[in-house]
Image (cartoon, rainbow, N blue to C red):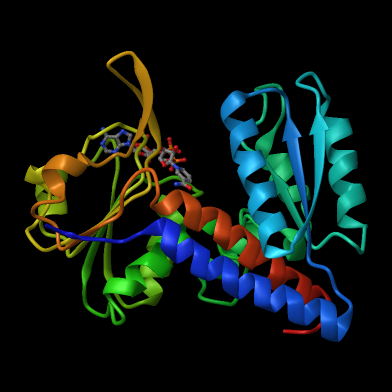
Length: 288
Ligand code: NAP
């Protein structure tokens, strides 16, 4: 049976590190790392994500300020809020919960956030910095995946890594991070041919697809490490249940290590958001 990479346990350790850092910043520099969280509309999943982020922030001593705009708010109103937060010296990180209602332009909003306060790491300047291997605010989910991978592979040099999915928020930044670790990286997606055999050749498989249980034991080389980013709600016996992109029951007996869903990448994403907020606070105050 594969070694279980426990995201709950590992994220608690990361949050502990954040809490110590926050304590030091408060005591020695009178800085309180502060995260502004912007939610537009009433999407139930987004509300849950925002609540979890705010709760974890509180536990780590990071101050969070929530801004809830109604679903019909205009682009101008949202842009004005971002502008105010950019100019507020008390705010170190800005998170706009995605997806936004369809009448709003996400790219415009992402580009409006000051790169130093872009704790999601989605601003084009941070994307470029990551791609060229310079220090930057790194997107939280791939950052969390890397912390998990380091648990089982302190040295990833020369490993074959396959990422299933090429989104801007997971697949592409994940590829940049694995490349920095000297992995040989392949990204596969909906147009890829022979996707199963490409995955079967991998030492590391990162699944970020959004298709419940797509990846089964036939895709995985015995002993490989499998990181499951997917969060899919499925119906089991009339009850709503969260499951990953990996068919855990079939893959766990043959993989070397695997992350569960829930309790895997999800908690790591939130922990890395708070890590980024603390880093942003330090950088903005020249305390790096
Ligand atoms: P996304 O933007 O929808 O991208 C999905 C990617 O998967 C696309 O590149 C798509 O290919 C590819 N794909 C779709 N069907 C495929 C198939 N049958 N075979 C191979 N590739 C296929 O999704 P995302 O935002 O990256 O999120 C992916 C999953 O991770 C979702 O379940 C999401 O909820 C979850 N997620 C979890 C966290 C966390 O904290 N745990 C954070 C972010 C996302 P094309 O590009 O060709 O369309």
